[in-house]
Image 1 (cartoon, rainbow, N blue to C red):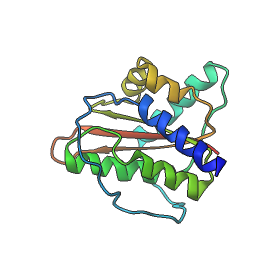
Image 2: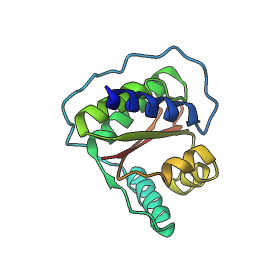
Image 3: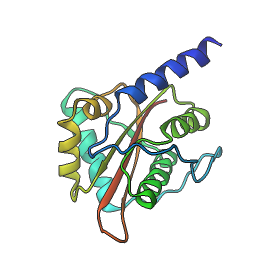
Length: 169
């Protein structure tokens, strides 16, 4: 019971402290495309995703922090959220609770955080924007051990959508 209350409190705190790098539009929560409970082990990273992860880890190390290990399952959950944002033309954290509960259940995470962004063309520009935002920077330098990322381009507009999930496992 204590563990469930602690998890609920942590999730509530994370939700209230998160912002996106673009305007948050108030949208009804959607149902995640998949309520996947099995661990996803395969994920194909593109060059922009890998470059962004490298920059995040380089920054963490420069601050005396541990580099984060990538987990494909978290990148898959990030990709699902990018798909949702592209389909709905929004940039937000809708269904973050569902994603974080999945990561807690499937991977045994203790805490989960998330950064989202929109319309950045390079890894350098999105990481700089996140580092200039106190809430996003808090996730980048947070007490995490693992991360996942997905960066997808809207096929109609060509603009990039970013979801970066962090977890302490």
